[in-house]
Structures are given as structure tokens and as C-alpha cells.
Length: 216
Image (cartoon, helix red, strand yellow):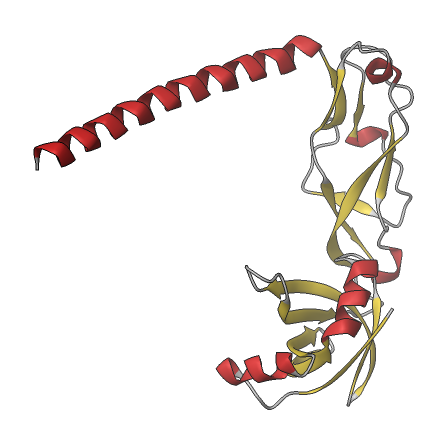
């Protein structure tokens, strides 16, 4: 995955003209690189982000040199979803960094397969600290041994090796757990009840508004 950038002198509202030419504004910074305004090809940066996400290194080339970088932020147009600004963090390969890594559920729990319970996932990403080259592509959690209600996999059950440290989470935190079916059913009943109550309230407000309009 490679992204090539050029120096950008156009800033502010004038950057909109760049997008018409297939170019999007960007910024790059890091421990060994002062913040610099850049421009990158939209198709190239889109393809790279689709493969790398926020936790895989990309080959990042500027007019001043070649680096390894992570996508730090992607800003998109709310309507068209098109990129309009990209931030890159140029890493020091010898310095540990923090990164959010997606949790990937692998396999099928027998408890779910046999309709004994539901699989509840407490977090979709986990924060890790390690050298840039050691950032995992994902954290795989195999649920094939979760057979009964209450069976779970805690953070302490994960084995990420000696090079990767989990951050901001307790070791006894249950990442996935089999919950009883009635929990889901109770939530559905409560949601329906709340929906009916809101519908009744909205009906009263509409009637009041209609009466007021009639009197006027």
C-alpha cells in the first residue's frame, strides 16, 4: 500500500478546487517530521485506506523522503461521503505507539447454534501499545468453545504475544459472553413499550397544535 504526496500551497476554501482535479488536501506529522500541508490523489488514498484502515502501515512518500505512516483521520463530505481531508501520522519505527485494533469474532458458538443463548460482544476495538511494525491487523477471538450461558472470554484469555500490550482495559473485562435469551426479549418488550408511550405523546402534541391552529 503506497501513497504519494506533493507539497500543498493552496489552503482553506480554495482547496475545494483540488477535489475537482481528483486531488484531496492532507497533512502529515510525526516525531521525526514537522507538520506539513500536502495533497494526495483521491483514488490512490481511497484504495490505500480500504486496505490499511487506521492500524496498518502504508508506504508514504513526499517530496522530502519516504516514510512509514498510519492513517490518523479521514474527513468526508456528509452528503457525498467523499474525502476532503486526510491526516497521516509518520511513525518512528523504533518508538512504541498506541493504536486501536478491531476485534474479529471467529467461529460459531455452540450456545448460539443450539439456541441456548446469545453472543454479546462488549467491544469492537481494543487499544494496544507496541512498535509500529508489530501492530496486529486484528484481534481474533474464537468463540467455538462457548457452550453455555455465562461462558465468556475475558481480556486475560487473549494471547497477543510479548510485543503487544493492551491498554485502558482491565484483565477481567469480559470481551464476549453468552447471555440468556430472555435478556434480549425483555429489551424488545421495553423498547416496544417505550415506542408506544412516545407515539401517544406525539399524538397529544399534534392534536393540541391542530386545535390551536383552528382557534386562530
